[in-house]
Image 1: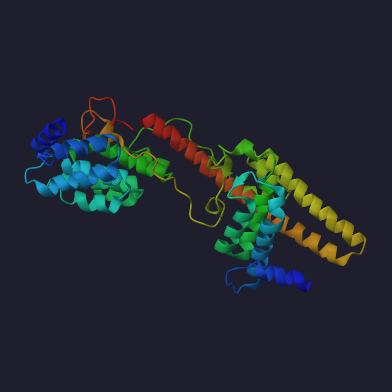
Image 2 (image 1 turned 120 degrees about the vertical axis):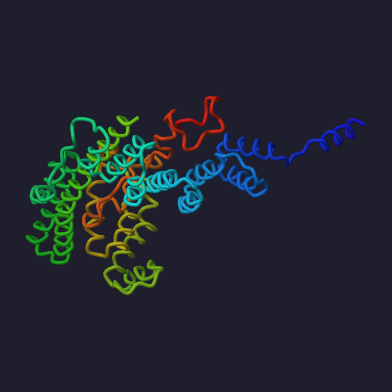
Length: 241
Length: 143
């Protein structure tokens, strides 16, 4: 009897009503199951003529969260309002890391979104480490990054470990010095003992390590500069929030 | 001597024509199969120095690849962890993450990937490009 009543009750609920589909889609979105939410919103869009105004925007949001940027761009082309369309495209390209394309669309956007547009353009430049340009659009924190010169790193690296010392990596510098000097001393030792094969191997190792030490000096400067930029970018993002 | 050469060739699974590449790759493979298991997991980096060397040689050729591998070998020292957050891209599986592409000095300048998924317009009260269905429930805003 209970089962029959339950069955009859279930029959009265219209699971696939417009409202229920939307509720379910919203629930999935809330649970951060964006792929399932996306298919529900699309189903809703397909089944019913009069749809909620923000559905296309939520669909774009889901696509962006799923990192399906190309699909999101296609979806944004459906917007009738040109300003909104350009703004959304610029925003999607920004998230996709295509800052040049993002700027093309954002620079077309007019007044209602001016403040947001400037923020996104500025952040786009900041992500590209073009801080001077970024400064034209957003307020940058003080203390700009200080860079080191790769040429000077290479010069310092002529002394084994010097490139690492120049970048403040004392441990790496000491280790490089030890490796290069040990292999050089070893080759000298075998040379004095007339052990040609061992001398050849140790000399080869010494040459490779010395060359790698110079390479490492330049690489250390490159990485030093990169992380200076990255830390400054981090401060910009904190500042922008 | 002959047996070493045969071992080197056997350790090289892929068809490679550059002899220097074959020798270098085979040596690393032999190290990985014979010496490395007896040492255990001792490398400070991810990918490990031998994997890094292989990838570098594969990607940038024997000359630059071996230089990069030797440079990495010299950086894999007891002080390496001091610099994991200042000179490297943080940790991965409790090891310092240092992929090949972060160490090629002639490549394009690296760019930071966009980390913030939801940009500021969505956080602003004045304008919501995408209104969250959870608005008012204390979730879904400003991730």
